[in-house]
Length: 416
Image 1 (spheres, rainbow, N blue to C red):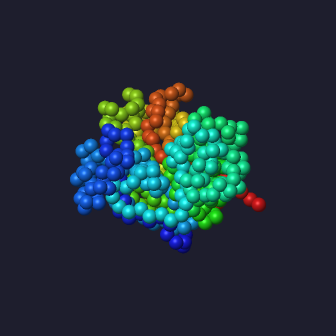
Image 2: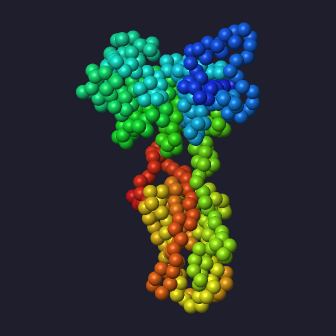
């Protein structure tokens, strides 16, 4: 965390929207609220209650408090509707708070919704000068940065075309180039970067890292936890308009991902409902991580346990295959029981079988587990997607935190 002076101070910040209207932060609404406060009265729109939705009002932010020091790079994370974009709008002065206090020091540049801050009738070049002027920069200062901004955006051939004729991607490119190159003290960036292509996202992340390394402050909103960990040193987790956690990025991201992981890690059936045949029934299946927890990481050893009810099989002719699919329905791997254990007699009654998946094999993301039972060289029965679980990112070294490509990510032996 930076030791610089405080550049953003948020105290007991609240923001309420009126449901069924386009924007609760219109000039008329804000003027009514201001007049009420000036007379020493409460906000005439303020509902009573602590729930996020009260009557025809919705509390987007409730009692938010934090400070950001100069040079800090802070990630804002949380589910959709948590209040992240609302907070950035308040920091950008696009709307005003319902209650609370917000103080900022220095020039602020923001990239929120696509096209925010652009005049559609003006050309790209004219909008660069307009945005610079809004930030308090002199025309000569903007002119010195113009060529760099245009080159970064990659829209040289359209810079003198009115913005209203730009595609969404072109607006994103120019908007980010302007925000990142006019040397703001504070840079606010929303999820809008996800609109751009992969090459531009990579270039934008590099630029934000350069801005941060220069000692300026960055507030970054993203659902991509790898990008957040790569860029930020601190994260603030918003949940239903309140700060759920504020601290080192690795800890906050870990706890956020663990809470929202997709898990169906155990299933059991009665004999009447159990999948299988008249010879064999699958009555239970579960996957457990190291220490028995059901939050899994790439560094964990996983154990898949099967509970079988054998009704008639008294020979050696039964094989089980474990099939693991990725979130893209790609088969990550297949493991064959007989290949490992060979054949053995089965006894009638309850049987337990387990398969261990070593650490550093599964990639992060959602996985689905299927089971294939074979007898006499034919399929006996198959149960598809019997479990669904998520593997979370484990500790990493280096500075690159994007998602690894591939169905698996084994930890191989390297030498030098």
